[in-house]
Length: 439
Ligand code: SUG
Image (cartoon, rainbow, N blue to C red; front, top):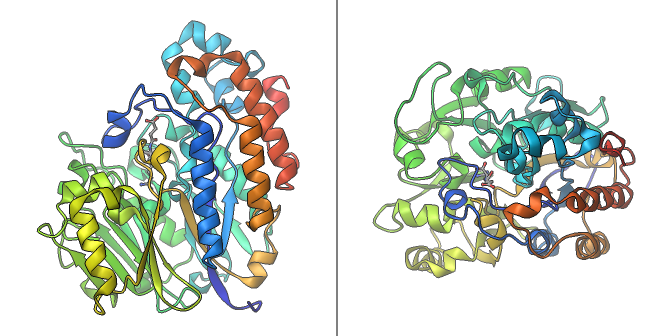
């Protein structure tokens, strides 16, 4: 790859050691249905690493985003608790907050930020805005730590602009790249940015599931990234899709380069994609019912271009276990009119039980060679680093975690030990503020 040549780098969220099922996300059916279940942080993290290894072996540039510290000392302090006392004061005053404070939800890196490649921005820098995630309480605690992690990695001010998250108010509700796509001939060329929203800034929706994204958020981000307004679209998500459980647009559609792969119920206006100059593949309700699309996460697959120019769909194993999606994909790969050339299925059940499929776990960042060289830390994956991360998970992660374990003082010590080692492994010294937790 030359200095100028841009490729899509998939930054996957490394699953944190507190991955659990707390049922925190209204409107996310998997999260609700698995509330109170026993999780396996170790299996979850290994499943995520196996996906990264598969992508890397297919020749797709793969990177990692480290998890934030849990509990977050600055969040504890802002709630009036002394971080050095761990969860002791929380347990006495507001024990119901413990799952919220210990959530590993930042693993779904598609919600970490909205990203604009340097080919599209007025100042020629790569722009990132961490999502404020105000629509759910546990996720609203992520943005400051995400901002710090992104600043630590995308540290070069000459190449990157990491913005502050939008203010934490419903009018600015932002869920990041999960509601954003980019249509382009090839990743390195300028693209058309598609911002998908669920409601207007001040619209009050009293029935149905929460609309997590405001139109205003997309407008503000497009402006601050210096995108050409002629190359920006704001498209409304269909309320039907949201109320059926598509809490993010990436549950019902995915864009890769020129291809938009979408369910017919994804957008409020069926003609929404008409002026995108995209190759639109619409899956009809008669082929895959919306219910099956949401339970199998067919559209939450990663659609990626391989080095040989073919497109593969990295799909969750649930698409093989659902009749309509299995039949659809079997027909798609032999249909010359369908751009999906092959399918790679992955077992990501631990994440899927919280409503996070392959596409939720990754943040796409189109980067030139020079930008990639400017990244801080050893975040780009190769087989050696993936081996080391697997060993790290085996060393530090529990194989089982129940709701009551979240308040086990030993868990915080394990998290601190794990993250102290991770800083070294990724060569990001000082990433975590362990001293504030008394370590
Ligand atoms: O925000 N689940 C996440 C899943 C995010 C999926 N991301 C994308 N579609 N891009 C959410 O609802 C569940 C946590 C719990 O219930 O313990 C959770 O946060």
